Amino acid sequence: MHILHWRKSSYSGDSSNCVEVATTPAAVHIRDSKNPVGPRLTISGSAWTHFTSSRR
Image (tube, rainbow, N blue to C red):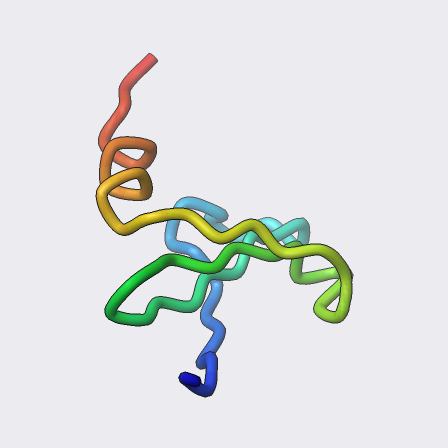
């Protein structure tokens, strides 16, 4: 089991409404910074790369 080291996502900008991410070799973990003990989303690294590289 890995200890998760959370950091503010660079995609959150200067907002106080932030997404925090923690990476492990197998996955990317995502949570709401306002609720650090709340629900978390865990996705594969390739899904995170696809999500963050998508342009609208």
